[in-house]
Length: 95
Image 1: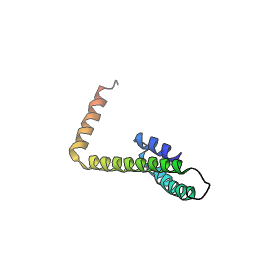
Image 2: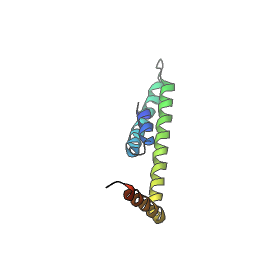
Image 3: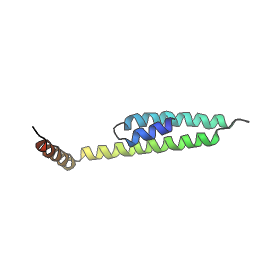
């Protein structure tokens, strides 16, 4: 559940930080699940691996998104272009 929630949160971009936290929690729980699945007569190895993979993917996407956003915001030309586009859109709004 954490893997799916983390991946959906990260892909919305608005909730990327929530997805990062959920992904980290999910990785921890996935590792615990893998350890528990090693015991004799316990099933769930595949489910634990799947959850771990989803959580790792979610965390990597969240980190990439954060790095891209940081790079974009530190680029003065990109921020100026965004400000111009916002101003153009504001001028087009009916008053």
